[in-house]
Length: 110
Length: 117
Image 1 (cartoon, each protein chain N blue to C red):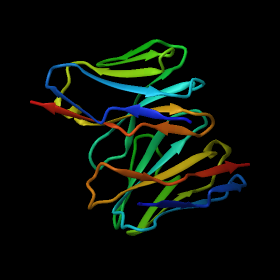
Image 2: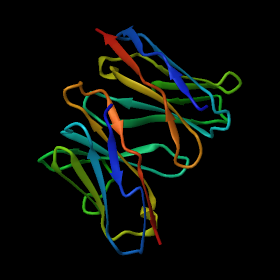
Image 3: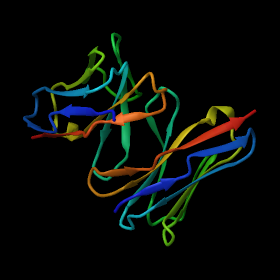
């Protein structure tokens, strides 16, 4: 069935790059998303990528998509303490249906 | 496990009318609930944060007079779409945080599909 998997934790030092990985199963997904959730707050859409793209860059964020391997990654350059949050990968599964991963908790050490 | 319900699951209304959507936490008290909107094949968009006993906090670009949120009790938040227009047709989803389990885990409702004719 449809599934999105991502590692649960990532710890980096301030100033380093963070790479959060995700795998998905639905090869027909048109959109893939990254959301950020800070403590006590709702999900905020960070970025998204169309399935016909390999890469998308938006300031400090770089999304890489390997459609053959169904692998999606989010790279945060020059990670700051304010980037500490939970990052969710999600795939569009048709219509209103979106499948979310369990979230990767990013810890940024000063 | 924690359950969040929404009612109705689907509603069709005429343009100009108002529609109320309920979000209930069934086995826990939720001091904070969130309302999202989703268009077909698109991402979730956070509309507002609903706090029990206080005014909702709306995200930029969301009309607070158009989308009225009331969080009158610890188990119920309502979203009222006032003077609905066809462009308000969408899928509305609520979520809730269980405060004694930390502030990281959100429990999502099943969503309400609104169609405005």
